[in-house]
Image (cartoon, rainbow, N blue to C red; front, side, top):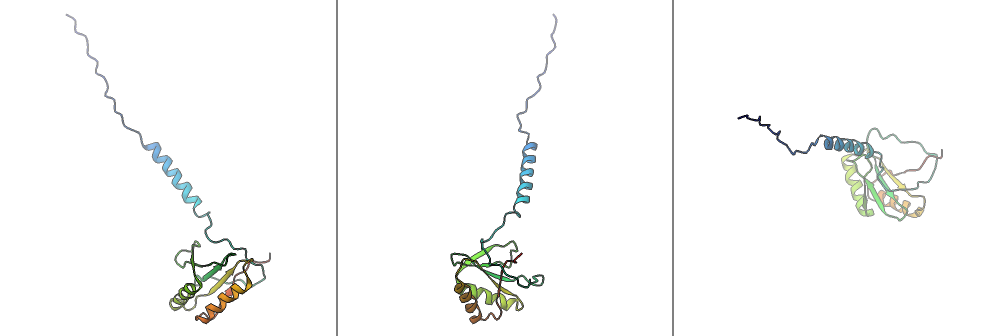
Length: 145
């Protein structure tokens, strides 16, 4: 009797190849890392223009208080240099600036007032800060150029 050879079937493995998914994930990660710094954070303020002397911020990051066109107050973060702002009342802003000045006595304080905000609101904030221990307060403007 003739014996026929037995053919062994190859075992089929049903595994998902994840290498292409890892490649796609890394490409997306690079895209997000590149676009995140481009997105500007903050409050949009239309600053008045004027020819003023530029201030050097290399020594210490200043405290910048922003008043938007609705009259809301925001203060910058000293930890995050990207420009994250926190909305506070005028009293809390004055207390925050006083605390910062105790830690950094040479820190500069500036007010960014929107062009459409009432002039009295900017002056009232500056007077309020001076009454609460801030001796010098500057105003941020856009260059006329």
